[in-house]
Image (cartoon, rainbow, N blue to C red; front, top):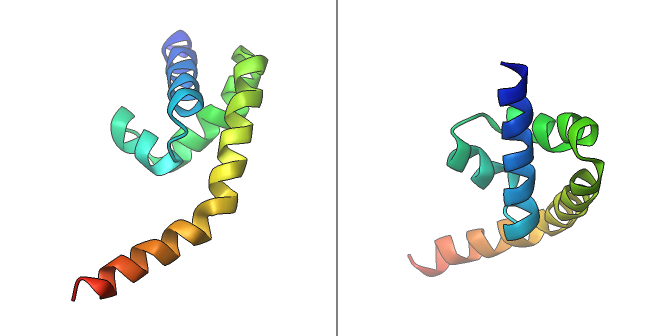
Amino acid sequence: MKRDIDRRAVMVGEHIAETGNTVRSAAKLFGVSKSTVHYDATSRLKRVNPILAAKVKEVLRNNWNEKHIRGGLSTRKKYKDK
């Protein structure tokens, strides 16, 4: 059981590092909650694969810093289409 969770953490980490996707999109893809993806990508991955964890941390930091821009673009699109 524990190996399955560790394997999922590595799979989530590889996906986020390769694609740069958000926690929300990774959660949808893997069929788990955003909290689970975040925990896998930060805490569990640090223990299992520290090098991958550092890459994922950088992607998550960039996504966090760009979050307000994506939200603004989404709102702009919403009202532009009406």
